[in-house]
Length: 427
Ligand SMILES: Nc1ncnc2c1ncn2[C@@H]1O[C@H](COP(=O)(O)OP(=O)(O)OP(=O)(O)O)[C@@H](O)[C@H]1O
Ligand SMILES: [Mg+2]
Image 1 (spheres, protein in one colour):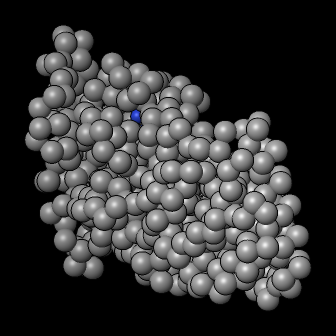
Image 2 (image 1 turned 180 degrees about the vertical axis):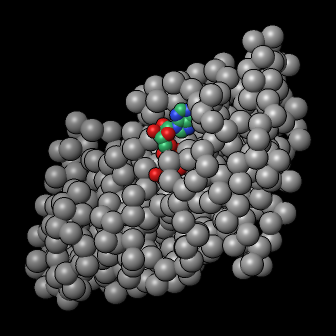
């Protein structure tokens, strides 16, 4: 019979001495290993002999620590977890339960109590091991957060508009999918529409945590947020990861512009591309996102209020001395016979529209499927119209592999001519 193995996970070494003393008395005598660096845990648990018991010390006693234990428990259900905290953690009872812990010890703990707890944990693990394999066949999707390597900072692209319903969320989710699909790199969407964010709804995701939880970390240190960033994300089947908006709109007020910078900085440490969705307003939060962005897509639809407000939006940015050379305009839901033509609107904005996207029923269908339209209907006109502008964001080598849309067919040319028909001024 092999000797049991106990892993102590804590930043301080206090627990190690006590567990070591207990281990001396147990037969067979367990091997005790201690780890104080979270970036070593993945390797320790994945490589070599499995551990029977994980003792989590006080430094895991917050919401993020419990989230990390939950990931470990989900991947290694045969390993017993014992929590040894000095205080009751600042977390919901549910978060504690979800770690699957067998016992919760209050430190300082009596020798006898610790011994009983470890004996039981070893026994439970032995019987579970008979039923459940305790080694990881391959790292789980969340695992890279535990063994993250230093990486170059990702690029940030933000989608904004002056009026609601212009298609920001539609654009943001499709852009994220496009970048992930064509670059093969890691992409994250940060939903900064803090009150009514809909990125998770558009992708049919059920986030466990949100940006609000990420900012609730007890350890108010930007480096710490970056270390734990991925624990707060929810993944879509396309590989795109999402940091969701708060569940309760009242939590939105507690997110400040410096928080936004901190979150985006953390995101770009983990992801090659960070796409930011925003509310339809020029708030301090949105301006903080602009400051971190390499490219800004400003959207409008083909109606008078939206077009007028696009002008106000751009003028305001100029007044605020926000650099405008990285801004690209996108006109969405373009339809004929709505009283304004694309040609008229283009005349009002000398920088021009980088993309004009038609109104398309495929978009509603894609939302109902929880898939970006680029994935659900790649051949649709609306998808094809998005490609050229999104392709400019890819590295040249990835761009060269994309088949850009063929020249417009006769029917499409007719459609465009109808749109571009000269019209009287609308101002
Ligand atoms: N090109 C399009 N064709 C048809 N429907 C579209 C198109 N673009 C977006 N929509 C639909 O319009 C609605 C609003 O789009 P979306 O939620 O992306 O806009 P938004 O700018 O994020 O809105 P909000 O300001 O409320 O956040 C959604 O139901 C979406 O499916
Ligand atoms: Mg939106």
